[in-house]
Length: 108
Image 1 (cartoon, rainbow, N blue to C red):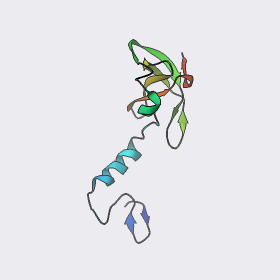
Image 2 (cartoon, rainbow, N blue to C red):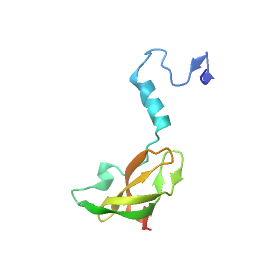
Image 3 (spheres, rainbow, N blue to C red):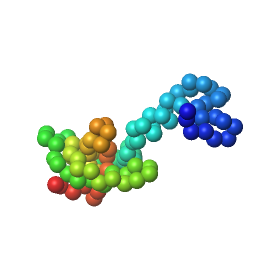
């Protein structure tokens, strides 16, 4: 059985719209959390051009998720003068990428 609340509904189920894509989106968000990355406006590639790495650079990075901040070993795969795109593998084996502020990244 699943977690229950209220009048016996299972968390994540939509009683109004059974099988609705929102249920799948919620399941995906819980199963594979996404990092809180910089927005397009913050990245501002028009004023801060991006350079792609020929070879990834080993780094240590602070990455924020909604619930927690993590400090994984990662690779810098692109950067601008104020932001870095990093790639790392989570314990689950999921490969994540995110743009973060340059000050959150340190070479290993």
